[in-house]
Length: 515
Image (cartoon, one colour):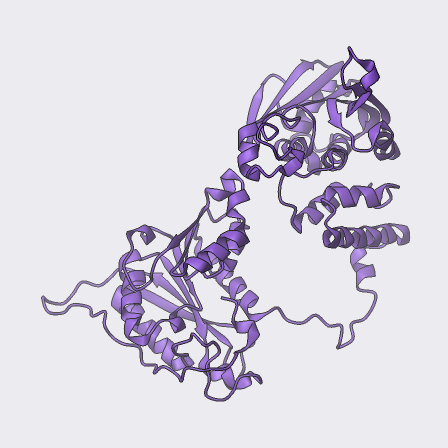
């Protein structure tokens, strides 16, 4: 698929400034890898009078089918041949919009470090797209682009020039001309190409709302086709569309009143019933863990006892984590985690960062060595006390990550749970729950035997009498001291001081079940 952007030079404003605005040198042909193929940027012409930048996207049709598992994602027919033979490599679509966002990221934001005065200058622009799917026909193309200041030429492409009686296809040859900034032109294309195609070639999540609002800033709130644009861009997902429209309406009102959207959004004073509730304890735990990992500078992380993959999912959203391994003894939990992460439909680059493996924390495992950090979030209390020394050896003695983060319930806080009967633990599978002193004794013993230092942090509201609901320990690896003599082996069999609590038979606090 192919797109060109052309500008004319003026006195004192050479057309070749387009190279500065796009951050791509006119004398070079460059190639960029995208999730669905290779994007090429080159300049068919570049002079002071006229300059044209071209974006050519070579789509890997086989990779596209594999990403969609042959289910016809992105409008590809779900048939044996139709999966591979379709319009995706030739017609501009959301794939081209993704390439625009990846290749011209700074230009989309209106950033030009070398010539900061250029991005804000409107200039004569001409955009040409030889083949553009137009669900709604040439009339819809006109309704979408004309209100933005473009002169629109949308010529329907016939199904077959030799058989005009067959009529027109759903494709148009698009030419746009207008006096706009390069950033405005790119943002219009970034949003409206997928809208006209009517299909997204990747999973639409909540962050697509943010992308839409960023690219639509300044023009989408007042666009007469805002409702159609929002609905199609967000793949007609009702909840996301409603969220986007509410925020667009807020932006429109703010512009009318010449005030900040935040000021309007906070115009109504919260009553006690309206005040935002604190996030669930599981979410507070993940936030605390992510903060510790970030401060430790970890890039390769183990989630030991990953359960259904909530922490793995949070780690994947942060590019600083280059390798993430989720380990659990439960095959069923790993299957749920794989579905949560959508591993089967995940892009190749993202999938290369994550791995789910089955294993037990009470056995040494060579696969777990060499990592920057390991997390045991709400795990140790599920292990029988006699097996805790084996867990400590497997994690701290064998795997030996530079940082280990352990969270576990604080048994003293249980009196604050109104729904928890006295003497019961929070989950039916908990073998014990430690007080703060018991957890400290265990953690300091493990740290001392294995050459780590340990620090403790509260998670959740820190009650002055009973402490926080969750206690967190951060172990940092140091040098293991040498034994004093042949018989002075550092023992690994010191049992924790806590005694297992009675095994409950009743449900436990809901907010503490999400590991």
